[in-house]
Length: 60
Image (cartoon, rainbow, N blue to C red; front, side, top):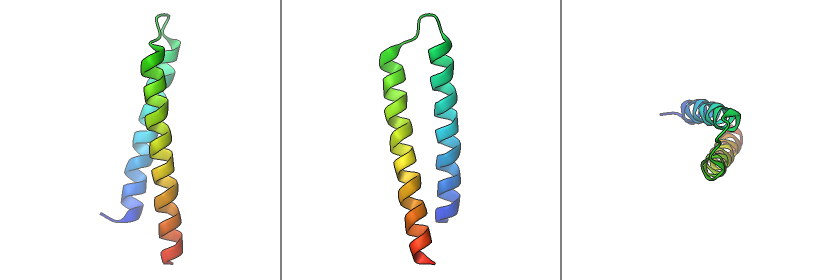
């Protein structure tokens, strides 16, 4: 798997987590612990995307 493919997959996962966060926040009985967990996971993915993007740029 190329770095670009990996970034693409991570970007899709990032989007899916954002959708899950929005759905959970819209719920009247929102689970704030779950929302916090999802936000941390989303941040880790964003950091990984940034890291892979920087590595990819420096390789060119």
